Length: 445
Ligand code: PMP
Image 1 (cartoon, rainbow, N blue to C red):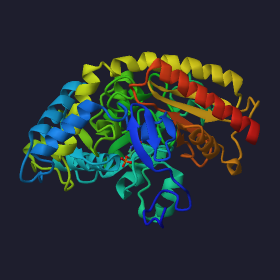
Image 2: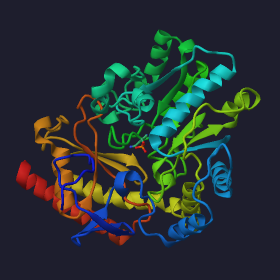
Image 3: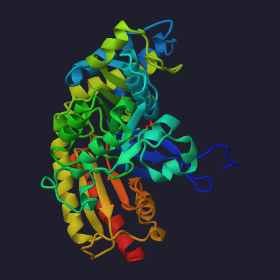
Image 4: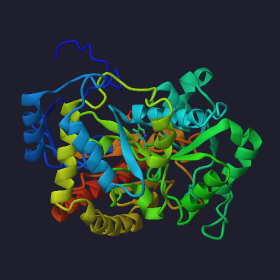
């Protein structure tokens, strides 16, 4: 190909050129087929080329794709907001549409701050978070993100919002085991709140299952109960970043449902448009909207393309498709099937240290072979990158995760295939993964 002027993630790498996608498979222009075990970046939740979505896009495009939200509302945006409210628990009834996960978490942050201002409290402006987390790449979202690698270059511009350890039971910072640990990592929040002062803190934000930064790090049973109690006791809002977990990824519409915890604000993204259109949202509870509705009656945020009818029509069609085909209801049994097969791989490949996650958001952490000390691979080995590259050669796409906490959990991948994956396709995924692990073992260990 001629000289490229496209800024790609790695400027010295060769990327295959995509031709088309069908279901869970992608095909490049050389005719190579890939099984997408990562849904891109945990996004293509219903697979590619779904006729119903293409039709909905087409129908909406024939009517109108864009209007400015200060001038018009649209049937698509209104219906989508209503349908999301109907499909989520509690009083999460209001939607602010944006275009990316970073915008969603940053909007959530701003709404939390505004909520306190509407109540006459102007000191509550910090949004605390955890280490080993990722909430987005814009400066506000990055300020909340406890991902040392992604923060490094911009540290002088960022707020110090990551303040507590994650619920990373595989390598518990306290060397304890849940549930007898007393949820020390959750209780850290109370200590930090006392130190900083609740009067300065607007909210606490967390990913229900830690995705990119941790590799599907999943909390023990009562973790969120403890977190929510601490937030309530101290007058601090709880924001759930469900950009990766929302819209059915873990087997429920929102992952928070697994722990029976109701956030005040939720950030949604990725699966909302399932890759067919850029759309994300801050989902806001009645409680938070109340003082805003009687106060300034507007939210001080927004983007030109917020709530554009085109993206809203796509997301509505995605939600209808999930419903009509009972896709979310089948996630748990698919997860069980895949996890059983993965457990067998773990017996065979002893460099798989941990298998974790919820629903079809599954993490594998890698450790030095045959150690019972959970010793990570040396960083120079670049184990994750090598596994991901070998898999891609074999026609299997994986999501590299981990390295979110000073490299302590250096090597991990996410397995997050489209929720529509069939049993036969899961078998194929496992065969390709097994082949990849065998090669990695033979070539690198
Ligand atoms: N929050 C979470 C939990 C995410 O996983 C991501 C993306 N990986 C984001 C926020 C940022 O989303 P986006 O890349 O769409 O800005």
